[in-house]
Image (tube, rainbow, N blue to C red; front, side, top):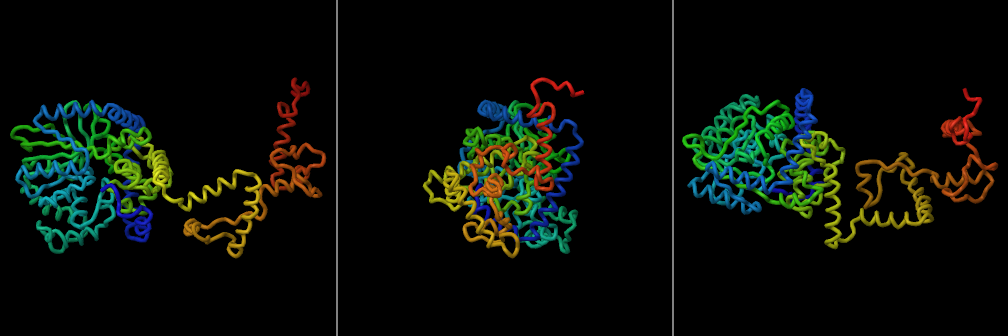
Length: 538
């Protein structure tokens, strides 16, 4: 679930052809951006909160081993059981065994990126266990036989009419309560249909599976924030609760949690706080689940931690603020990224968790505009990481002995050409032949392969009729001189008695700038000023 079946450029090109998808994404991300901007503007200390969040996360990453041991001790002391999973296969095996031990054939789930990352639903299905998503957006995706396309709003690529059709077609077919006849696309009607459909699942499930937004190391407390209350139903009704959590989700103390409960809702959904913030610590007799299991997932996280230039990606609190401001994501949607983590954070996180060899195109799925860095509530420098990962992609290709790509061949040819001044001069003169390609339009609209990819989406300006070097040499040599001196070592054209002086023609291009420069040089303190102050200067 961290890699796609096809490269990002191929998937993105197909997504760009879907006008409805672009309208859905543009409207949704624009709405979230506006709401976020309003609630962030209410806080005078937003920048200080961001800095605090980044510092707390960096402290966790620097002492991750100590905090993990502390978390395990606290969870165990409060009646929970901690399991360690090195990868997706091990995590899935642990969860499947726990569900089987509970004698369950179905589970209810509260939204969890970690379980999507490891493909837990598919692993449960292979074991004969039905997993029912209870988050409204996740339910839409599941009933539509679809994949999430956003971290916080997984069904962001669907509009209300599409959701109504999915509910009417699939709710009854999945074995649950069917949608009511005459279902409309009004949000209240859709929410009511989902409520009726899910209540049966909640009341019958014996096992629930959750993720965790945060885990407090000092007390062993886990926290989930959500907007609908479905998560709280999962966390309290079933007999057994299994939480799958990435290693990096720890915060050291309750006081640290205070910072993130201000950063996350504002950045994710544009709210001052989430409607439902659920916390649980181990098990309590007579209240909530009778058994609690915590599965701590590595799955490439320690490898990411080992990279000094990339480990800051583990600060991520899954708010999706970077997705909502990214011009690439807004036009292609999340499915084009191929990973459960789309957008800018997915472009740096997925290659690090799964390896750049499996995601060589994702680091290039960005304009490097920097909007993601500005929006990130924990100040992850995603643009710098993308450049770092691009270098790793190039190094991986070079180490694998791949044949030169067209871009690499062009760069090698350019380096050879620029190594000698005479080669470069001849190349510049030869480039003037390109003017023949754009004589009619005044620009070059089409180039032959492999340069055709450039002109497929943009025009190339015509080469100048005269190169800068030739023009410079012509002006330096004067109207009667047959040969041009070296442009870099020639005397200043303003000093020689026979030089062509643009100051002689006040209307010549650049003459006004040169006049201003000469005036500045002749002024007191300028280039020609005497060593001692001029007595005539008042």
